[in-house]
Image (cartoon, rainbow, N blue to C red; front, side, top):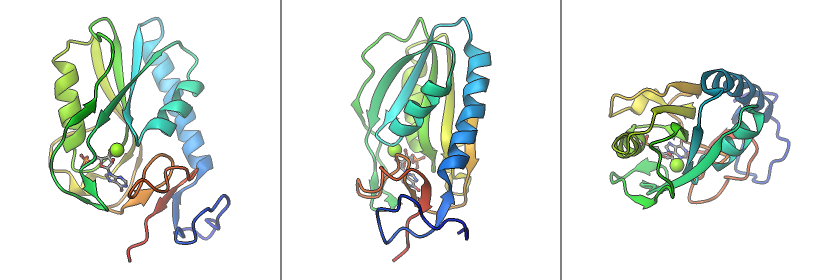
Amino acid sequence: MRPEAVIKNNKNDSIKNIIISAAEIKEKIRETARLLDERYRGKPLLLVSILKGSFIFLADLCREMTIPCEIGFMRVSSYYDGTSSSGNVNILMDLDCDISNYHVVIAEDIIDTGRTLSEVIKLLKSRSPLSLEVVTLLDKPEKRLIDLKADISLFTIPDLFVVGYGLDCGEKYRDLPYIAEYPDE
Ligand code: IMP
Ligand code: MG
């Protein structure tokens, strides 16, 4: 809801309120990359993108980092029907490597209830990585059902449904370069 949010790159008339601009995201990603550079320099590092929502975030983050890393992907069932949670978490696509020799950093798009991430964490911990941390682009703490906190959270947002920069509503809007509020019809 910002006046300056008149919208460059707007591809959808229904999207009106940018809550985090592309420039703000870029700046935070730079800071986060420096943090990860420091923490993991000289260590075998695997960045795990939780698909589909974190694909842009991870792509930008790993390119800002100056230390080497490997990339893995997991796909977890999105239980969002439209804009509200419906309950179950399933692993639809798993990592294709043994993580026991890696420091693992999970990159998530957004933590809402915490259900998705808590299942992913449980599963990956059971595989004994050297260490495990979570970095999330967005944190929506108001609806948390599971006591879970990311090690690094780039932005905390109120309980809004948001789209863009990888996040979707019904598979749309992932391609927007900023985070915008999805209009409540
Ligand atoms: P949680 O399991 O409730 O924490 O939800 C996490 C997943 O729900 C995220 O990875 C997203 O895919 C989806 N999600 C939660 N909130 C939003 C939102 O505001 N916009 C788009 N997707 C969301
Ligand atoms: Mg997601």
